[in-house]
Each structure stands twice: as C-alpha cells, then as structure tokens.
Image (tube, rainbow over all chains, first blue to last red):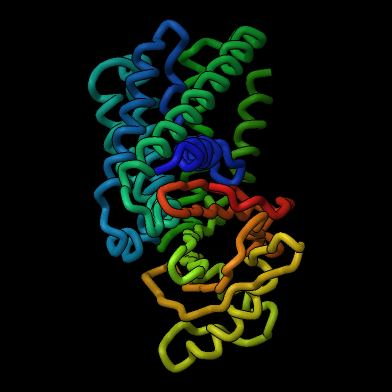
Length: 192
Length: 163
C-alpha cells in the first residue's frame, strides 16, 4: 500500500459523504443531531463515531454476494433509518439526546448504511492485497466528512434558531419532521 | 413567520428525492521486467460499462458466455480510445484486451502491452467520463517494489507513470 493510495482512499471517503448526489447519509446525520446543541458536543462525537464504527463493520465483513442479493432492501433500509431516527427524536424529544440509546441506534443504523457503501468500497478495493489497508483510510475519510457535515449543520442551526428565536425543542420538530417526510418519500420510491 | 418556515421545510421534503449514484472504476497496472509487458486488470460496474458500450454500438450488451465475444470486441475498441498508454514520443499505445470476467456486479478486463522501452510513458484513464460527469477512475501502478496511485476525473490529462 503506497501513501498515494492511502490519501486517495481517505479523500474518496470524504467526498463520498459530501457528494451532493448522496443526500441520504447527510440527512441521517442531520436528524441524528437535530436535538443536540454545542453543549452536547461529547454526545455528538459519540453518535457520529458510533455511526462510523457501524458502517465500517459491515464494509469489512458483509459478503459481496449478500450486498448484491439484498441491494434493493438495503437502499430502502437507508431512508428507513432516517425515518426511525426522526420518530425517535419526535417521540422522546430532549430526553433521547444522551445515553446509550442514541449511540446504539447510530451504530445499528450504521450497519445498514455500511451495506449501502458496500458496492462502492468493493470497487475501491478491487484487486487489493489488503482490504484493511483500504478500509481504514476510507472510513477515516468518511468520519472526517461526517464531522464536517455535522459541524456545518450545527452552526447553521444555531444561527437559524437565534435569528428566528426558535427553541431547540421546536427546531428538533422541524428538522426531524422534514427528515421523516423526505425519508418516507424515498421509501416509497425505493420500494424493492 | 413560523408557519412560513414549516411550509418551506414541507416543500423541501416533497421536492427532495434522489438515490445515491456513484461512478468509480479501478485499474491495477504492473510492468513485468522479464517479459517487458505492461499487464493490467481493470474493473468496471457492469451496468455502467454496458450502458456506455450499448450507447456507442446500438447493441444490447450481454456478458454471458454466448455473447461475450461481441462484448469483448466492443470493449477492446472502446478502451483503445479511453484507457491507453502514451510513449516518450507522444504516440498513443493502446493495450490489447486479453479477456473479461464477470464477478457479480463488476466486470474485470485483462489487458496487455509489450513495451521494451518505457521511459517517459504516461497513462490516460478516461473511461466512462464522457457518459457520467462524476465518474472517478483510480489507477494503481506497480513496478518492482515501487508503487503509485493516479486519480482521474472528467477533465484530467494523461499522467506520468513514475512509481
């Protein structure tokens, strides 16, 4: 493994998250942290990292034949994770922002998103001597992209809430409601 | 004001709608000092390369055994224009397709070029970029123990082969 390949794998992971054509992962992250403020930075970091660990696990171990056979359900499952996260936010409100439920949910849903990255990563590591040498920089690139997305979203949320005097509780309803709505449309479109 | 905000987000919810499409191909190129051959394996998503070949030829592409000779012939012509080496005298040096193999959703193509003289060689990997704007192509090059990786996008120029 050469240093060019390490940097490129990290770059492709980073770009994969920020790709305007890949709004589903970004929307999941937005909904995941919709109920959180800058004061909850530790919970944010745990949730995003748990999500990365989840999708790295399936990238590492999910057999290609499984991903190909269930591709339709995997694509459908990604908006389902957004819908469930949005519902959880709406039902539990601020009670659900800390604790094990949030990072357990993030890691569990990360497993499904990892299956969604599966074909891309399979191509990226085609013919490679070491899948791990490809996976580690790719996942670190994804993690960096996710943290950037979350940071940008939290800054915008903070500015928006302050500009329009919106409480975090109401903001959560807006973002989670929007995420749930979009996810529902995607679930209908992607029905296998 | 708040009602307007809710309406705005509702509108966004109803208009946003897309799948995550991604376009990537990977090639592994090696120079064998004994045989003086460049040997390459290149992987494409089967649906992407089939679509591209089908657009060019007007034929339906099938990678199954009965139809593979036609698909290989079309792929060989295509790759000679979109994935090739350039020698030190600025001459295009297309590689010869030795065969293909389907592995699930991926097509793997094997190519070779005999080249006793390799100084100042460059490589162009523009496959599928004319069809998909966000196509990315990676080429890993190995010569002896030295390795390098090159990255190509739609407007990328040919790059030097120097591990």
